[in-house]
Length: 159
Ligand code: MG
Image 1 (spheres, rainbow, N blue to C red):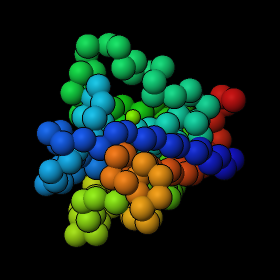
Image 2 (cartoon, rainbow, N blue to C red; image 1 turned 90 degrees about the horizontal axis):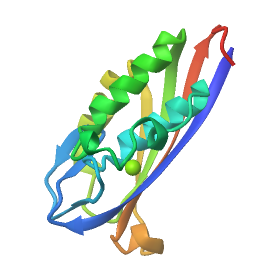
Image 3 (cartoon, rainbow, N blue to C red; image 1 turned 45 degrees about the vertical axis):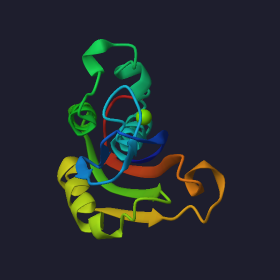
């Protein structure tokens, strides 16, 4: 059986916050604002995995109001989701990830982020960085968006 899950996330881009993408800390005068480390990429991937496995969403699993997740390392939360999916006899086979960010320039970090995602997910992935072209909040460097699909293979007895 094959399943695809769609994940999406957005966080405001603000001064004075660290920028963490796919578990990699990227030097930048602007970072992502959120209750956790606001790693928009790990959040979208967690939601994509949960969607594919029919397990809900990270907002329910790791509520933002819970102080336990204040400043949380979202790559650790993603690993928890990976474990949940595998425990249900799914194999993660592929992830396709698109990040939209006007600034900072992310291209020099492409290899590091992609490699870390592959380690976290235990599978190959394609990572695309898009500029905002001045359009929308991403284009005006007010936010970062991430979309992804995640593919699962398996024969679990859970629907
Ligand atoms: Mg988020």
